[in-house]
Image 1 (spheres, rainbow, N blue to C red):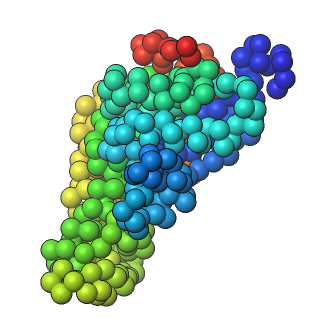
Image 2 (image 1 turned 45 degrees about the horizontal axis):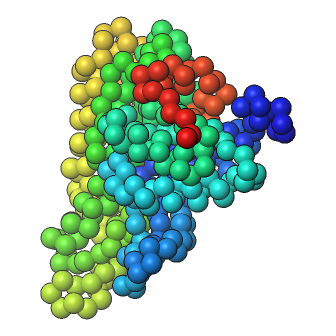
Length: 348
Ligand code: ADP
Ligand code: MG
């Protein structure tokens, strides 16, 4: 680092942020991933003061007294609460940022479906959080780079990134996205589906967090070699009292049917719109899966069956977008190209 890198602008402090609806990861140039925390902020409703961010705040979701609100500022892949997103970004950037006086360059990964206004909001949040410059990279591109796919070559690669709020499907060739689709269905929607299932089939009210635990423990997209049962606790809708229910993995799979089908259909539709040459390439190499949602048991198998082609998880589905964004820091040229259409913004 030091003055030379400051002058040239390529300091070791440049960073990449995977601003996800469920988790935010920060990659610092030369150091790798230094932070990975839930995208949650706890705010004091009386003063507007930030009480906790990340892991500490997530524990408060659904468990706060009236005066504290645990907020997920990104919802469905978009910034639902700009001020809180800004606070969160500022908190994370400053947490990993050793030199308070240096303003890093920040690459931020956004879902490909976001609008121009939403992109602008992300850039503004980074600048407000102390970044000198903010660049955007599209999530599928970052995921593909992170998964080690040959994005720069004239060959088709398909990535499916299933996050908390959105699922992104994209075919990439020669450094660009050829066809893509982003749907606002992801892991959160799966949790909601479990909440609703318990309500209608067991008269049981459960929280989002409990639903997520059930999904991780017993959720699946295909029949399991060994079906399991899991115990869940909630509140009986009728009596209002605490109640325990046993759920089978078959039942959880049934509960997850709609959101899982929606994601599978998005993949099929995108394949349908893929030019034949590229479809042939994908047939050879297979579909690469990224994002936490792709860890749902049997999801890869389900895609193989329904799309009639190979499909495999990226080496590290939860970090590959951050790693890919980080790698793009090392190749600023490509980002300049990506940003040519977005317009690059400077700190004022
Ligand atoms: P985002 O990029 O939107 O922040 P992530 O890629 O971090 O999202 O993935 C978060 C989602 O992945 C959450 O909905 C979480 O419940 C889900 N998830 C994580 N691990 C698993 C798993 N083993 N099985 C199913 N879903 C999972
Ligand atoms: Mg993501």
